[in-house]
Image 1 (cartoon, rainbow, N blue to C red):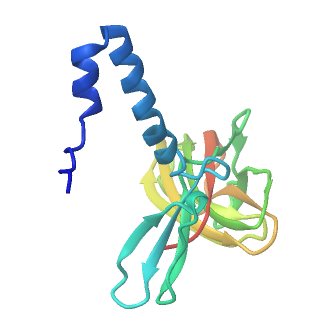
Image 2: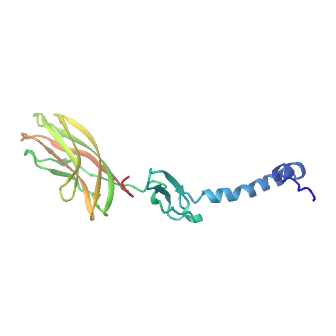
Amino acid sequence: MIPRKPPVNLLARAGRRAPLAGAVALLATLTVPLVAASASVPNSVTGAINACVKNQGGAVRVIDLQTGDSCAADERTLSWPGVGGAATHYSQGAAVNLSHDAGQLNTVLLGPVLPAGIWNATMSVTLVNNTGTRDTLRCALVTGGGSIISGVADNHDGAVAMTVPGLVTLTSPERINIGCSHDHGLPAGPLLAIHGNVVAEQMTSRF
């Protein structure tokens, strides 16, 4: 039997016999398929990262649907965006006067109608109370139907800046607004909401 020759290292042989330019070209040829294979995670069409989760134990493994990978019978599928989606950002164009009456919810920023889904929203707003009477100023993320998503309260008799995050599931197209109020009746004087804005990003699912 003729002994089988050991496999030849192509890069080493190219280094001995081929000029430098040839070696570089050969290296590029060898590495191209590796780059192409890894480019499908995230999916090059949908941009999603796909994975399988064990029903028992919850172990997660990333799969590449474009090369035919799939989940086993004892696993369930999971996917999430490979990159962050574009956020919806809106803000008020001018200061909004708040009612001086106690407990009245004032819409200081009316948001656009957003599609149904899970939304992660963050609001920021600055209130100015120059009536000369201290009160508890309250602002919240509020749906167009008046349901409070998330809110904060702060005592201040001058200017107070608030930042509030919130996570909400919209079952139908709906707005995410900023609403503000205060606890007691206030005398005449500047009572304003300024610099209000919201950043809302739609999520794929809750984990």
